[in-house]
Image (cartoon, rainbow, N blue to C red; front, side):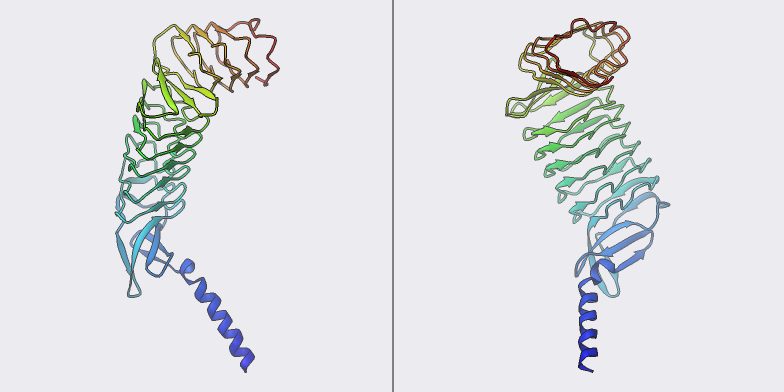
Length: 321
């Protein structure tokens, strides 16, 4: 008898320890999962939810009042009918891909308690034309705004230190990006497919980014200086690299319309993949003797580039085109 009682006690203890994560309830079109004694994370009951959605600050279930503190991972992903979302002030976490492929989402508020925009959060939100990120956000993850092809302007929040890989890739209408003073890094291919960029703005106190003739340049503080993005709509026929550049980033000159000649500076040793992708009028690149690597398809889609005889003999490896 004592043995049976002991077993039952253990089972009840195990169940009690896992009760919160398993307690799920639905109110209206929203599903809640208990995450603590009086907190829940919220998601859509299914992806048919539509219109203007307001997430409540608190919800009652079985006589217990729960505070809504987070949006679940993929909580509203592929809810294509949602036009706007109002989040309560006590939301502190937004899960990865929370609003991914909400095609018609055009308005959302991000509470000041949120400190991170995770990977793919707004990926594929095609009608999102603008968004304000609270100044307290310190990190924006990979592909967070990838495919937001109507996003026109983005202001990096004051406390943000890093932007992830492909963070704005496919933002075809993006025109202006403003960099805050504390921003330290941007991941690879961050501006791939951003063919409407007119200019970058960098606060003068920033020690890692600068604009040179409207192009964006990043310095990692350890001797690496990367030419990140040339504004595709810039009308100059010739561009000469600033002397401190050590690398030309992937898609740096993608789809630039008017360039005929690019002079690469003598300190540059790497041209990354797709650096001059689809520069239709580009006729010539002057390569320095310091060059050591030309990446895959670096001049793919440049029909006026008819030969490679000026590539220095010191280039040890050219990836497959």
